Image (cartoon, rainbow over all chains, first blue to last red; front, side, top):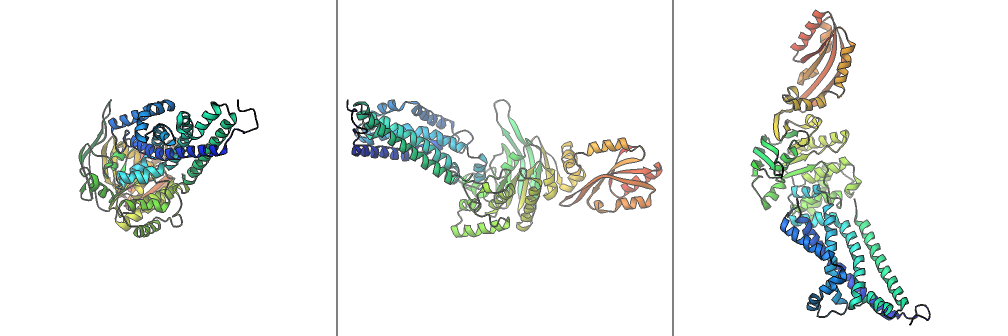
Length: 224
Length: 341
């Protein structure tokens, strides 16, 4: 037992800082990649759905099925399932970069659904108006669909980003590094509860900051 | 300008196919303000959407400004749409853009360069009377102002035809009138052909040259607005005409009058065009030994003349009353005896 001494005596702040940087790295890359991939998937889901510009039932059904499957696999199992894919892509299963494929593949389908919901909230009349002006589908996507759904896209990526922070902790447990890894290895396995406590507080701070930034941007751009 | 030939639109459905538009033929002249009136579900929305290819006819052809809209596709159709603008009941502005940027949108689509765009937007803002609101967002505007933005946006690329989809139905009566005045002004100044659909006879009366009445996908009556007012044929047309010529409470009032006057006659006079402006009542009581009591009346202006109804009670010797009625008839005024006292 190592936790008999003074308050926070087991906390090595340098190691804690390294772990924080790893968590931030995993979160940042995953959020950016999820934003791009999820927006793409969500846009495709929306455009191919009934009554929309690229209405196409087979394609819509396929994308929808893929999204649902990946959304319903528990994250911890997804990491295990993706081991061959990750080793092929990254070359190893250890380290924070190795966590990225699973994080992105886990989060993007979830975000894609949020994007689709956001796009569906756009008034159909606005799309009709753009068509009546002779806009191409590309113009409608870039100048109508994306700007008009932007608040929903931002609040969606905020929610997804926070979920990703949680996922990084889980990925940490199987060797990806970061605060989750630290809390598991030192805090849980060596019973250093102060390390777990500090790691948790830092994760909470990261979550609060993400939420604050998301809310701030949403309120700034929403002119409705 | 616009020619609709034998056009039908059928929406397939599992239970029963819905025929929204049923073999419609229509020709609309260059520079005309043409109204289509009908209740909801009559097919007028579908009809107007076939004029810019938002809906394709199941059969028949639609030609606008020399282009066969029902046939062209892709970039040719998009090019044509820049000449056939549309305004909407719910305005359909982009909330994420300011007034200026909303008006600039069709110019961006047409590939107009930045400085030219700016100049054109300034002109349009002035045309629709929105000076000072350039940087406001749609959420900060009233309904009338939003429709003005819609109109400015529709005029941006100098279209040949303006389609109005229930453009005033979401506005209060006063704002409706100011938007209608703006449409008339644009029609005169730019020589634009305007096609509008509505369920309000008031709109037709105020600005249209000709009107088509639609019911269950068919055009049941077509003619100049004054002719349709003067001589409505179909029951549905009569109902629409009543919207503006007779106040709602007319029936009750007439019943009340019948119970009150026991002698003489209550007659309904219908004035059309110039006859509405003659001093009929003055001549009537000067030349005949009757008393004339005005009970209720209304005169409506249309683009090509006025149209009015008047209820009067005539009392006196029966012979004199009949002579008076004959006199009114001779003045080309419609007379209908509502009761015998």
